[in-house]
Length: 94
Image (cartoon, rainbow, N blue to C red; front, top):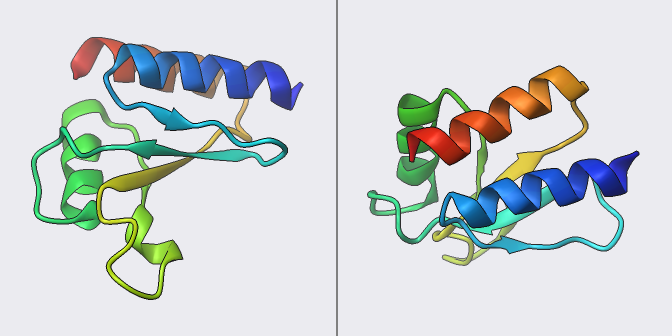
């Protein structure tokens, strides 16, 4: 089930111009958000939320230094309906 969901979110992220770092066995995925406006991952995550209504976690939350400032993290442990909606929003509103 998670493999299918992982493929769905990664495909949508690619289409939206946010290349994913495809995980091997997790329920979340980091994506390169460097093309989004903002000085850091927090601003990029907020832009994404405001523009698409899809929440993400700033990549910097997972690094001790300045790493992750161009990444955002998405959880795909969602219902099929919620994931479909998020993928549609990502691909049509960015």
